[in-house]
Length: 151
Picture 1 (tube, rainbow, N blue to C red):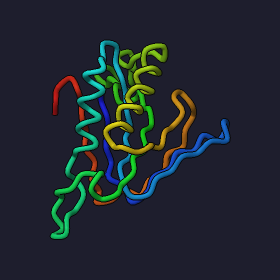
Picture 2 (tube, rainbow, N blue to C red; picture 1 turned 180 degrees about the horizontal axis):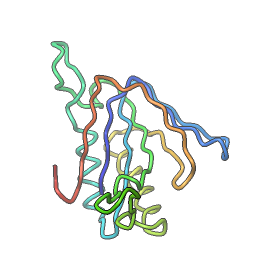
Picture 3 (cartoon, helix red, strand yellow; picture 1 turned 90 degrees about the vertical axis):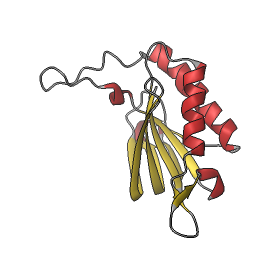
Picture 4 (cartoon, one colour; picture 1 turned 45 degrees about the vertical axis):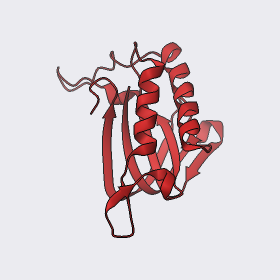
């Protein structure tokens, strides 16, 4: 599992075809991708990292606080393109990304685990939909977390 974590002042996902939107204020926008072989342990490890990541400023202006200590929110959006392979040519291959029959249950389970660790509901995109994501990056602070390489 791989995520791109962005500290945001606000973020929103819109799915015009579904007449759907979800938005958050201060918090984390999480773009999430899955591969075959991802386990609940992968989901839990990444969720724990996200919720515990000390990337919000404390009273001294030092990145020392997790989202839970600043009253922040989380928005999780699926993004299979995080597993793009660009080794050959200029057309990315997405063969590493899990197919929807595997990825959808992983995405739903991951969102549930994040909610459990956060102790609150989260915003979500719609898996596989044509989504429009907007954000006001705060910092900017952008971090990649990968459950396979544990970085």
